[in-house]
Image (cartoon, rainbow, N blue to C red):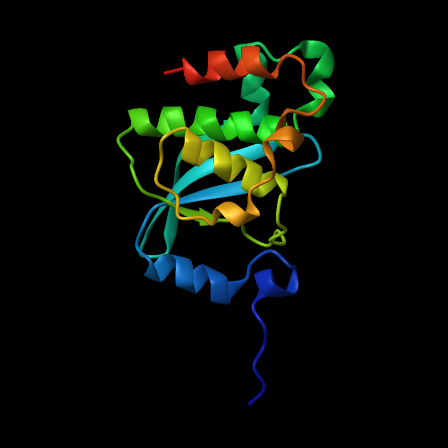
Length: 160
C-alpha cells in the first residue's frame, strides 16, 4: 500500500518530525517567524497536539517605544529582532513563564540570523531559552545603522 504524504508537508508548511520532537518535550515554546516586513514572536503552549497562542509580539510594537516612523522599513532588521525579543521576554515574564524552548519552524538555521538575534534578545530579557552563544550575531551587527537604538532599548527594557 502506498503512503500518501500529509497535505501540510506537501504544501511545505509543516515538518512533522520536528513538530513531534517539540510536542514530546512538553514545554511551552517560543515561535519566531519573519515576514517581508516584520518579526513575529509568539508564546505557544500545546496540550494534546492542540496549540494555543498565549502571547504575540511583533516588531511593529516597537513604534510605541520610540522607533521612528520614517524608519518603519527597518522593522525587519537584526536590531528590530533583538529589541522585539527583549520586549517579548519582559511581557512573558509578567505572565509567569520562566523556561521555554525555541521553535524556528521551517526557517533555515543560519548562524547570526534574525531568528538568533531575537533569541538573544529573549535571553537578555530574562527568560531561560536553551541556545548556543555561537549562533548569535555580533553586537556591532545588531546596532549597525541604528542611531536611535539605545533610546528604544531603554524604553523596551522599562516596558511592563
